[in-house]
Length: 239
Ligand code: ADP
Ligand code: MG
Image (cartoon, rainbow, N blue to C red):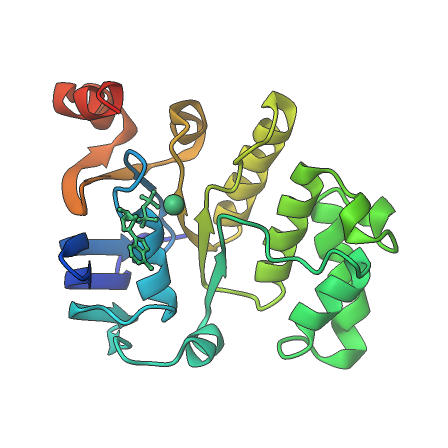
């Protein structure tokens, strides 16, 4: 995939909650094909940025562009149709339903009914949960539920996938598998912006890293540049 034009651009974006500038004047550009990671200590504003990209929050100031189109005030359901998809920090699965039913609900709008079951099976195979297709989601492990939610995000065939701490709460083996999934998706052409605070995970997969601190952009560069940046090391150690 050629990494050229920006798929997503934030210009001077801020989100203020009363006196708190949770996100403060952020400029951010994600290129097509990129695997880009947003890191920063707890409370840095990472999830709030995702919510503004998805239209859950309207920015207090600034503008958001998707493929050159100003989407700052667009409703979140319209953004999904543009090719934006998000997996939130906490799994948004329906625990009482089966894996298949969860996938079907997500796939409904985006897959032709004649191809839906086959596409769902392909995704479940990719996520290594095909053997759990008719299992009730509450019976799945934490990791399997997180993968299912990635599958639900993929059911809308996104061009840009946002992942908020996709490996949160996972053990080493599950984390490793999640890293592989993210890389495979990116190789298949999905642009990915993900949040994580686990540097081991970030080091494994991220090409480009943006560091947030107290709502502001603190540093940006390759993983090597970020890890060599003493100021970044300091804000993490200070946390
Ligand atoms: P991160 O994801 O980087 O840990 P968040 O984006 O969740 O950080 O939060 C950034 C800051 O904004 C935190 O101080 C948090 O308490 C605050 N915040 C987030 N959402 C709200 C809200 N809905 N109302 C008030 N403050 C909020
Ligand atoms: Mg968060």
